[in-house]
Amino acid sequence: MKFGILSDIHGNIWALQAVLEDADRREIDRFINLGDIFYGPLQPRETYDLLRTIDAVTILGNEDRLLYEPEVAPSATLTYTINQLGTEPIDWLRTLPATRCVADEVFACHGTPTSDHVYLLEDVSSGVPLVRQDNVIQQMLGNIDAPMILCGHSHIPRVVQLASGALVINPGSVGLPAYDDDLLNYHRMETYTALAAYAVVEKRSESWQVDLLKVPYDVALAVQQAEQQGRSDWAEWLATGRVAT
Image 1 (cartoon, helix red, strand yellow):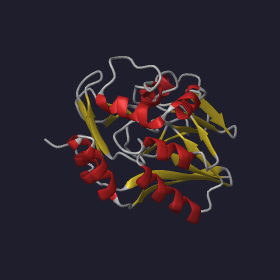
Image 2 (cartoon, rainbow, N blue to C red; image 1 turned 135 degrees about the vertical axis):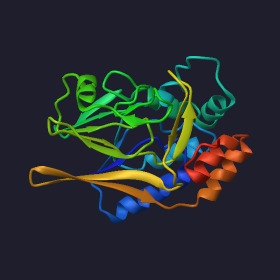
Image 3 (tube, rainbow, N blue to C red; image 1 turned 120 degrees about the horizontal axis):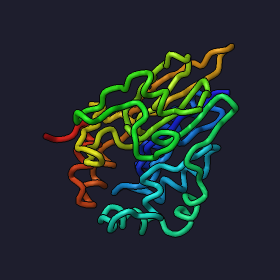
Image 4 (cartoon, rainbow, N blue to C red; image 1 turned 180 degrees about the horizontal axis):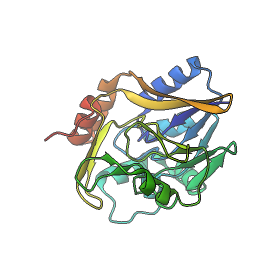
């Protein structure tokens, strides 16, 4: 079985189209979508319509949950996303699980097994992401003993092999290569490229092969849409993979 791992699409239909075209050439059997699918000033409804045409196991991300369970007064971008989506996609989000076991050997979560807004692999207390110690990651995984653990949320592609032998894989973000946030403390997440990211994992003999992939797409279309919605920060993130200083 060959899986295509998607995460953090954030309504970037142009990036998603490019990723799915690349995946088609690689003969992917099935997709696993790790959440944060729609939120942003781009094209959330078109993203929903395209995703519904593929065979994908999908879980809920923190910014998916906010579309029907806002924690604070909705921002202009959240309101835009909700209005663009309409009822059907939001009702679909309500049905999604927070975690999922796939094919007996794969555990999928957005952040950690118990939280959709905590990073599994990265400690951001310094303001930049640093990979956590092995024992800390294993403690955060709790009783999850799958040989492959998938997580998203940080937007940074990584493969970390634990002392237990398990692989923890973050495919990176399909649609948003950088951002900053002040949840818990201010931090910046940057990949330094505008390319769309996803991963392909395949079981070969008794081992999993992992390919972290970067795919070009027409970034200018996404940047233009972000600017039209008054999100110059998103435009910068999309165009450069960096957070402006």
